[in-house]
Length: 576
Ligand SMILES: Nc1ncnc2c1ncn2[C@@H]1O[C@H](COP(=O)(O)OP(=O)(O)OP(=O)(O)O)[C@@H](O)[C@H]1O
Image 1 (cartoon, rainbow, N blue to C red):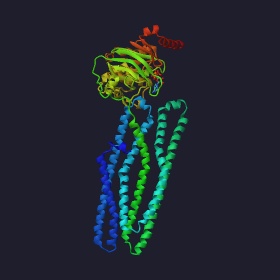
Image 2: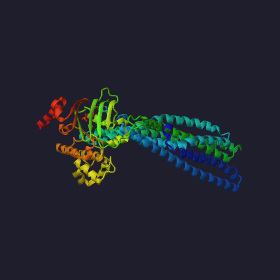
Image 3: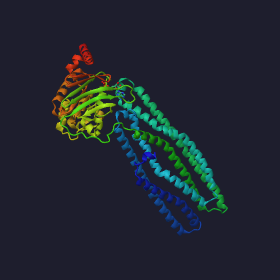
Image 4: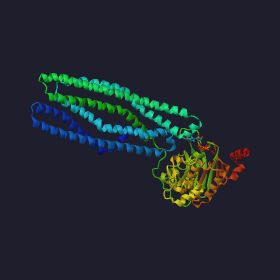
């Protein structure tokens, strides 16, 4: 846990909090002694001026204690909040740079719990540590010593009360710690089921699985609640027993102290002070117990966070990145590329080899699972290849500065993702300087002008995930967003499948006529022969192998797989 705080917490604030806390403890330790002085020397002897003098001293120490407590809480919460903030930033920064391989390692719901709930656990313990964990031992030693100076004869009471308290704390911790530990995994489970239920709500309804999903959530929720109730019951049980031990100690002090007073071997004031010190000693143990009860949960949280922070991102900037010079013409090349998914035995792509330059359209066609998306994912380094080269403008993408690479590639994924905000915000995502005119131009190419105007223009609101647009509209907006960005390579991963034949053809024709887009290379993944037929280069994939390469006419004449795809699509149309 200390490892996680290192470099993320402000050391001056921590030192300040500790200094304030020490001042507070010293002030608190002085008060019982002063009470004893007032009783012994002021009240017993009727010395009013002494009472006033010590009374003022007591007020002074009380004020000091209050100010120090304020300073301590202020700095402790500042440091723990700052620790939380830095942890969240670091996790976010780490996760945002994850490649798809790393996302496969940790569930998204668990990542959310780790960034929120786990960080809060660390914050709480940091706060407690800066208050109680340091205060308790100082108070314990100080109060024990001062109690001893007030009465040697009564110290044996500690020797009875403390072991009883420790045995009790031990029993409580034995039960509570495993339950505290389990809280985090149970929170994870709730988040996982909740998230799946929310994102899949339509499928759940369509398959009439509402009850099943509700039961699944109910189980996770019940499991978490039962665990929390058990922990709280144990903690609740602790309080009356602790109070009993404290009251028992007080009774013993008054009983035996009273006898010492009547035999004139002890003064009343000393007994009162002893009693207060005894409470401070027992309180110190309780504080330590509380901190130690929270530590296992926070330690579990710390290791869950550390797990994420320690993941080595496979895809990062090269040591000496090459910046991509601003070229007026561009090229894309795959040079004998092999790729294998992590832990997979078979290659997902084998010996992929092709070149294309500005103004050319490369289309990739093949059956489901043939490797089309995998191929285009290699261009912006969503995955890194096993051997060969993927080159943009003659530079291997692994040598390029990542920011330059991502600027050079405009990507429309299979599933369109829009962000909360306005249409304009979404359109400017890859080109923040894009003017309204440029945006409308891109929207026109993507056949989106009409519905965007109907929604209220560029200031129309986009809900979370683009939920207020249809699937086809979302896809068109994602295409327009990619066109607003001026790139060297435009990738459309099966983005035209949501469009009807006519719109698909019009859109591709517009892409061909646009001067800006023609400066780059266009890569289109498609299922339909009609979509790929007018491409300059068609790649036919089958089971990760490049089984055909050429124009429509060439492939139609002599490529079996292509002919088979053509036949199957003609058969489909014949059947209508
Ligand atoms: N993250 C992954 N981990 C392991 N294997 C994967 C992963 N993603 C895809 N694959 C495998 O790689 C192969 C190619 O998948 P890919 O998504 O590239 O196919 P595709 O041609 O785009 O299919 P579709 O047209 O259905 O989108 C498939 O066999 C698939 O099971």
